[in-house]
Image 1 (cartoon, rainbow, N blue to C red):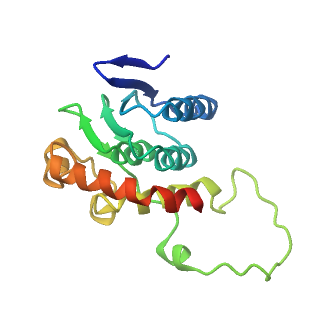
Image 2 (tube, rainbow, N blue to C red):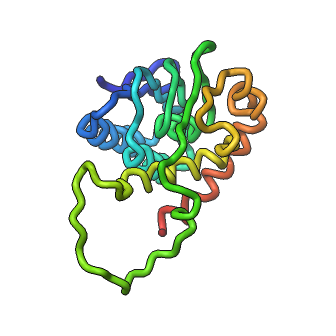
Length: 199
């Protein structure tokens, strides 16, 4: 779908689909092109059931962070959101969500012990056979863990994971209909842009 512009706001549709990596790769490239034109306001309309894969959500975050400081992003959730889609929605300078929609993020399958365990690069016991049925952690799960860490900057993940979060609670956390918080977040992201671009 093409980007539409109405009353000074450019609009970009992001469908939430399960098992659609090629869709997200294509949409992220288009999103980069739209942001390269430095619109003043870009509204991301998020619609559909499913979950944005953690890697795609982190990539969208990097695209948002690299945008012009003059571009404000509005994330508009027209559906309930889960996992990586929650992170993308939270990254908007201004956010809106359908009144009866919910956000949800599941627990990571990586234990707290594994999260804190240092990686020993030089210690190698040799290659181990791994297939899709093995008990080893999926690399996507480490990306999902990073998504949860970033969501935690907005919402208390440990207390809320595994529970659907409604509009009233999002409002209590100042994530919707709160111009003071939105202005603060916009200024933080615009100030951090040069440092992120350099890294």
